[in-house]
Image (tube, rainbow over all chains, first blue to last red; front, side):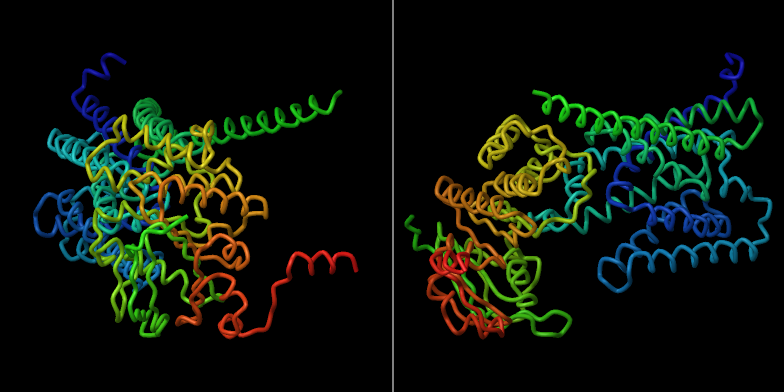
Length: 284
Length: 259
């Protein structure tokens, strides 16, 4: 194990896993509570179009994906919030079009030497120092924005109508959230890939939602589950010699099933306590 | 209670179009500080739209609206002087927030962006919770409360800013009779203690009529506006609802019960 940790690629992979876990765990909190998971799917898949544009233009694919995903996120937000289209329709159109654009551009560019499989399914062991800096920058920027606007974003997730009536800038806040989502998706592409990034945004927060009573606990459980699964998945994948991104997601799925079982047994115990309480009162 | 003569809300010749269709037209009324105005009317009459105009959420097509001396769209940070309790909100009952978390949301607009709650804000939250009679329930999850308790928590959220004007949109819908009665009694007490001006929309004509100083009946436009007894027994009320009905006195109700 110590020898494994002495490898530079493994150290970078671990740091990337922890950073992405923290980032997606925190943002996933809002994805689950504001019910943005389908928007997350749309944004993550549209990132493929951004990667293709980057490859074609010769600019950093992840940077191109960040810009392109943010634009797609804003377009989804604009189309759905102005009532021009239902949100799921807007997502369906933009997500499939962006994927199609990506495939078309890649086939045009004949750039098959690019590690497309790595973008689609992740390649955490190939994280470069430059990727790590990009990831750290995105994590700091997104967590700062979310931290400073936390009370407003929580209000927006709970009751958007009253938040607007109270004078909060609801539309700008929503677009800030979408932009953070686009950046988190791009940050997570190296770790789990475009196809699986949604898992990191939804499953950790769903675990927190099952187990926590308060939002602070949900936030901690969500970030914790995402970081633990990233690190555990990385080691398991190394020793079993299977794809790291998929292993991280499978670890998350196992944690979610455990959370479901714990939540269910807690509810059963609580309802039994209520029944017993009534019974005790009924006895003279 | 005596109402201050200064109008808190003034509406002149208000007209509202939604998607090109007229929803409200020729609406005129004003409400003095400390008064309680009830808005009644059939389904689809535009009652909620009228409240949304006062909140600055729907722009008027024509006419002039002044709330707390300003146009609703220009209230900005002045919005924290308006408390809003919507129709039973469609929130996730498992949303992981406690009563005090929900009430603190009402402080968000007072605090402003990028600012964190301080001790004074938490004190104000506790005070609002106490005022609505939920002391001791601060840490309970909002979804675990009964319907009546939830409405009180949302009322506390509406009071938690520096509220002068309280707008309620069918706040008693879904509540049983005792809970409705308690909510109205609470509103009267808050109005007196905090010198609140209240505008409430409701389908419960009798209960609202018993507590409001004035009723305004709308169905697109104003059908009648005046003292509750006069409005409830007017033919304009029947016109607005497009049906004949009458309110039984307590004696008549008792008599009907005996037969």
